[in-house]
Length: 345
Image (cartoon, rainbow, N blue to C red; front, top):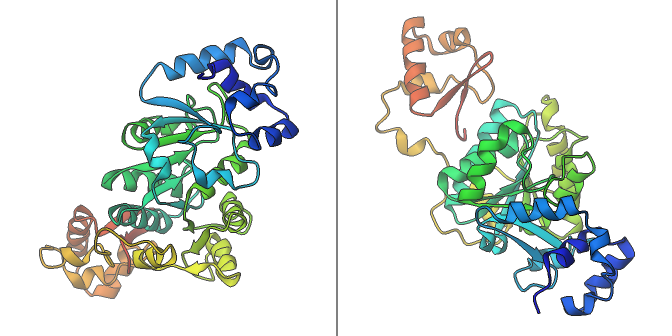
């Protein structure tokens, strides 16, 4: 007999000892003995909010004893007993790569996240992340431009955090999948995010760190990936860039060095579905209206117009006109302090 919603929600209110007991059982029916008085364990408000959440859209709860529960989660330390899933739940079982990085990501890091997310999606991998600001947001948006994406939440599935990601979260639910172990109505708390990260890393074949400092949530996810026997990859960066200190440390410790999409596919032993794009600008060069001399003088870090003029030897008016063309073609981006080159070097 199918368990009631109240019984399923009661799984979230068990002690650590009872959760261990539950994971050793073979069926929900056998678990009923552990779930004593679920009506006392689950508040009426929580039950009502969950019923309301389930009544809208393509939403479901997947519990430990269901065949749809992701096998990748069963072997980790303290796996969640239930998952709140919004969107295409079949994507939980797709081959995934988690892209993580700083919430205050630099423009080059956001550009890097977009490049890898778009082309890994086109290669057939599902890009996942934590729906935070910075690298996470850039990865989700780029993945959606090419296909689907998966986001693991640190709140209840009905909450929007940060608030300005409301539209992006709704887009992910419509074109991908949202996952949370927290009941509807659960607000963000600091201790929720390490719990979110363990699910993110466990669902993925590997974790790609785009930009991280030595003390960051991204390195926490990296550590979890290693504990869960997942591949760990990192983008290299300048030794002078404080934002990349975490990446350099990971590389010193043995993380796979990644400079292109093919590196990721090889590390994950994943047979890509489409040719690898080594440089998203390669196919644009023949039809470009911009002067290639100018593009060569724009760096991967913010380059001022004065610097571009000095390097290129072109008049200021020509440089300004060409930068507009390059920006329209998606080959440079305007940032504080000037322009950066978009795509790989």
